[in-house]
Length: 254
Image (tube, rainbow, N blue to C red; front, side, top):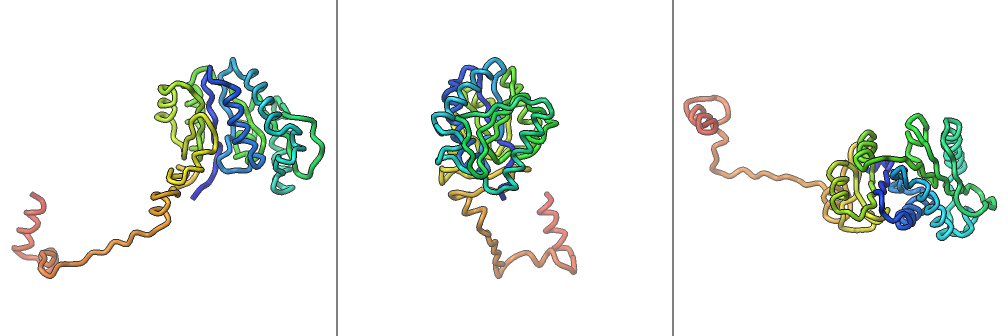
């Protein structure tokens, strides 16, 4: 059972922001963010937030030159969901967040929402309480990688987690100290495309796995069958109990 959730993307300080932004734009804007494993928010080292915003803007422009008007850019599935996403942005803005729209000027298409960054998002804002499922990305600052890990661990277990780092020790640290469904290192979404890699959530993000052997086991029933041998000692454990029962129990409890 896959239940979604808020999947974080952690960018270590010093990692190529262009590369990270390119991957997050892919993951966040594929189907306009309407995938269960889309990166829900980005954790960026505080000193690199401004540079990340610029990198994200450039990658949005490369992927969708006409912005939300681009024919390759997806619409939101329904008017109801479109209004919900607009409400998330308005709620964050009302509570003090900075809203940054990306890409070219939007020529109106039905139910299309401009790629949007939210800066200064707090836990009091609805956008940080619900899975977004749309092209809206809160950017959260952190000081040390341990702070980013603590931020993730203070929230429900995510269905997916993304870590961008060139340092195996940092990758190992994040993998060891966080609990999530699946992880993609230095990209987004692609763990789902590996047929023999178990896919599934943990805790609030789901239970069980599928794909490959694990999927066969999860979606199959193992029928246990016991056949009693003609000669056996099971009768010694049945009433009426006598000396042989005492001997058998003594043997089992020795």
